[in-house]
Image (cartoon, rainbow, N blue to C red; front, side, top):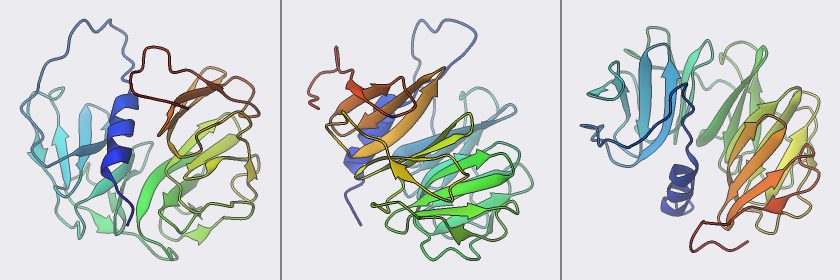
Length: 238
């Protein structure tokens, strides 16, 4: 398995919380105490924190306190959450679904030929899962069954998935790929992306951002071209 720490550091540096109020300072919370925090999810008033080796922690008081919630998990390295409607966690050994707000988790891996899950995305009635080395899978039945959708992908590590309108983007170890037909076909879109190890993707209005091991890149034309945006970021080169 590839070195995870560098990916986590880049992802951590790119996490953005958008609130209606201006945040003036950061306050150290009491947890979670489960190792590296790899991902977050928010569902209603509950915050989910996924850790590297410590499982899932939840907070219902804006992070003031955290409690462990790992019943049913057979792997406690959590890489991704899905909280739009269904509650889903992607781990190093498959996908787990909770129907009771995270109290109990059940594996849902039918059809997955690679269970090292790195990213999750809801797009309409479809759910996408990016894996380490197995490409991208789709479920059309709320995660009950999965099938791969890798046509056009030249790299099968799906570090990041994001949707912008009807377009779906996948960030891989070798660039950004675009699908305009719900994952049926993918095409590479990385002109100007001088570092193709893409760890995280984000959408803001008409802008698409890619966080790479060489810094941040911006595309304002649906991924057709990219420009590096590293001003103020130390120790990063494109």
